[in-house]
Image (cartoon, rainbow, N blue to C red; front, top):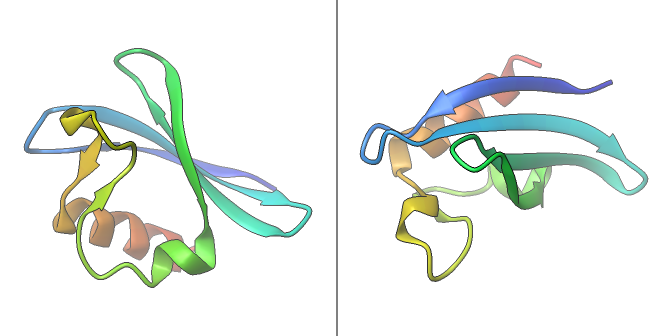
Length: 81
């Protein structure tokens, strides 16, 4: 089963479509940039839940950074699933 939610990065105003999906090797969190409707990155949920600060989803694109607060907000949402 897949779960998804939209999150807006307050520093850039960028909206992310964040999905948690079951893959063959475990649950994965996927990030889609809604401005360009473009897949950007994915992480195993277990790995993402260990992040303690912001996250650079794709080096070289400053607009694809998640702040500490956004990472924490997404982690809290995942915790409710």
